[in-house]
Structures are given as C-alpha cells and as structure tokens.
Amino acid sequence: MKKICLLHAIVFIGFLLLAGCSNDSNSGTAAVQSTHSDSPEYYLLRPEVEKLYGYSHAVKIGDDIKISGAVSMDDKGNLTAPGSMEQQMKNCYNDLEKILKHYGYSFNDVVVENVFTTNMAEFINVSAYRNTIYKKQFPTGTWLEVKGLALPGQ
Image (tube, rainbow, N blue to C red; front, side, top):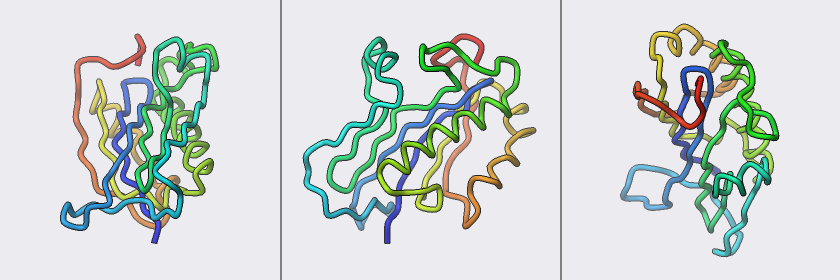
C-alpha cells in the first residue's frame, strides 16, 4: 500500500507544502512503498525560482518523499491570484498534484497534511475546497496560524 505524509502551509493568499515521513512502523506514520534505491531523485517544478531561492521542490530518497513547498506563483516567482485565498489554494493544490503524479501518487496517498496560515478565519472559509482534493479520505494533520510566510501578500 502506498502512502505519503505531507506537511504543508496554506498562507493568507497561498499554499506551501512540505512533505516527509519515515517508514518506521513504531512511529505511527506510514511511508511511500517503493522499490527504488536510496539515491535521491530530485524534482524541480520551477527550476529558475528554486535555484534563486536555493531549494529543490521535492526529493525522493528510498521510501520518503519530501516536498518543500507550493506557493501560488508563476514560473518567475511572482505571486498569482493576490487577494483570493481560494484561487491560490487551487493553484497550489494543482502544483502539488503535479509533484505527486511525477512520483506516481495522488492525494489519495496522503496520510498527513499540516497547515500553516496567516489568516485562519479566511482559511476556514475556503477549506471546503479540500473536499474536491481528498475524495477517498482526509489525511491527519494540524492547522496553525502564523505571523508570516515566504512571499509578501500571502
């Protein structure tokens, strides 16, 4: 059974996803079942932006997939859909889906999703959109409000 743990942040007007979980049966978390080697497999969603900021969007090592983030942005790193958390959420889930598909997975494989937002009330107002993403079941997770995130205006 393939499973993915995701930790991500939904920002005031955006979304950030960080992922990873270990294949430790004692930890209570599940991991992606894989026959691949322990050599890192990197995925760059926006290579120029990722090089500028100094990160890789995702990496798979053995049974772990780590996804560093999804923010509603264009390929040059500019914020898209400012003022609309719902549209930014849609943009971000679209980017996350590209990463999951690259590794052969879907949102049905996600088992943990932790959310960080700069505006919890607005996030809750648009959170029903997640019903269109998680059709089989919702992952476990935690929602937290924070002071700030990666891009101004999020």
